[in-house]
Image (cartoon, rainbow, N blue to C red; front, top):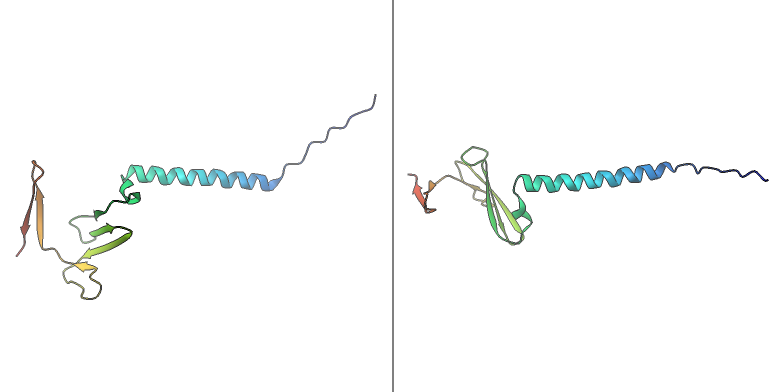
Length: 108
C-alpha cells in the first residue's frame, strides 16, 4: 500500500493583513454610526435646512446654518467684520415660555 503524503498549505501572510483591514473598516463605520446617534446629529445627513448653536452664551459660541448644500459658520464677537459677514455681535436675548412661545428682548 502506497504511502500518501499530506502537505499542509502554508498560510498566506497577506491574507491576515486583509482580514485586519476589513475588521478595522467595520469598527470605524460602527464608531461613526454610534457617534452620530449618541450626539443626535442625524439632521446633518438630511436634506432639510437647520441651524445649530454650539457653546451658547460663551465666548466660543458658533452658529452653523445649513441651507441646501451650503453650510455657513458665524462666530459672534464684539465687533462685526465688514468683509465676509462671518462675525456678528449679541443684540438681545430670546426666552421660550412653557407654552412654546418665544419672546425676544433686545439689548441697548
